[in-house]
Length: 250
Ligand code: BGC
Image (cartoon, rainbow, N blue to C red; front, side, top):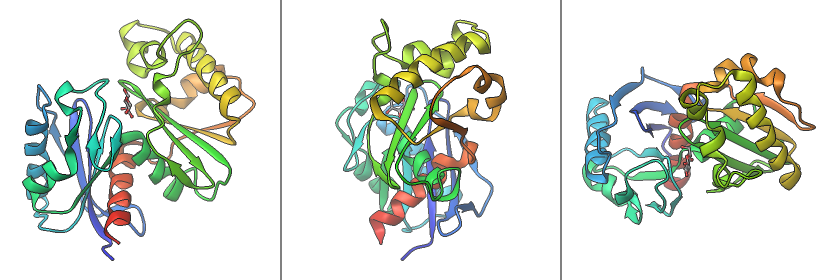
């Protein structure tokens, strides 16, 4: 069983990586970031993944990698905020060819959720836990007694007259529409109340960049369900990706 795995987090503006000790969830070297190439085609992104592996002199040991889309058995199957060429790409194999390592690709929110459930605020929580990440889009990760139900894509659920929650209430929308925290929080509240009605979760975990500013919007959100900000912040994706790769390689 490998305990050191290179975790890589592919985002819209940066691709970040660091070796992770998967028994403790700690990064064992400072993370390295390379700007996401534009356009972020499979070929261009694979080149950056290989650059990160080289940077950490990562030879043939496993790599785990997040991707902001539906990922099934290593294939990327949707492209809400990424280059459409990703739809139907065998990302595991593409990255394996470039790096010479075994690579496990999974959805970004699922990875962040796995890390929070093992090392963060979801640790030891049973029942239904729902993590939502607010960023360019909205990602979701659903856990039932600690077990992930992958690719839930709840950011694409409709709320009220809005067909797609993420184009109304992602963190990016607060900036694009120059909304006050209070106004944006009202939208997040409607969204979470709808999820609460549909899933009766035991805990909501709020992740993404905004989770470190929870005092700005949590006070405006009224729910029956307990809601907590994520603990691992920027590193959740890297750590969760490494955890997923450990599962595939053990
Ligand atoms: C994608 C999800 C992703 C989320 C956060 C959404 O647009 O459909 O797969 O998890 O953005 O990046």
